[in-house]
Length: 355
Image 1 (cartoon, rainbow, N blue to C red):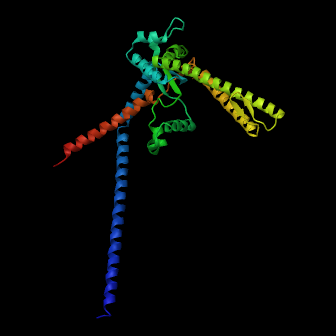
Image 2: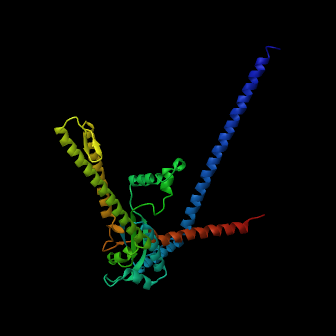
Image 3: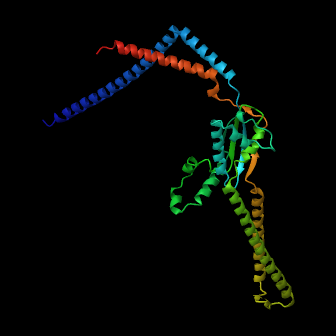
């Protein structure tokens, strides 16, 4: 009995392996059959579709040609739209008013309020603008590099506390930025006339100013005066101290190793005098550098906006795929034919279906 047990175990293992491989083979066969049926179905659909087009090629071709002719005629009758761009850098937070006013201009154009548009874009000192030809404006963030985005993110993180820094993420910051995040703005004007864009400057420049930006400009001017006076006062004090230490050096040469007194100020005549003189020189250079940066900011930000690139005298023809009706109409006609055929087949199938 003990010698027959191993043989039975071997036979049972062989049976299990055979059953396992049969299951794998059946599963593979089912997968292959399914893939084959899918390809057959796709091939059948393609052949049936080609057959429908072959049987009805006159209807399909005629419909597409008629749609193309209608689209071409509509392209020729529609007026040509021209565009031109202006790149600006607003100051004193006037970018908020700029975006609001551009949206306001578009609302006036949509409502065909020509009187309000005439008051905005025309004046006695500027060339006449035909406001009827203005089709609209578009404003979007200006061009920026990856370095510009990184600097914006760094400026954003400086305003966060320690908990906010843990949750701050560069990718989310870039994704969730609004149109107000940047400092450059691209304004695109659209018109039916190609030579009016240079006359739109007067109306566009009026979009930057409001009571808030004007008040902020006045406050910045007052702050500039205060900062300049403080820096100049500090420079005067530094220059006085420098004069004192120059006199100290002169007296050291006459009376070596003796402290020198100027009023209430007692100055020793050791090597610390030279060190203090260098510190005063560094302080003077730092103050002059602060004064230089303050003057540069005053000069560059003395206006509400810097126009980096103005509207071109002659606009470019606006080209959009959706406005090429000679291509859009035939494509729509073809889609409608396909939907009509599918709907027809569904109706026939429903009528002939037996419960």
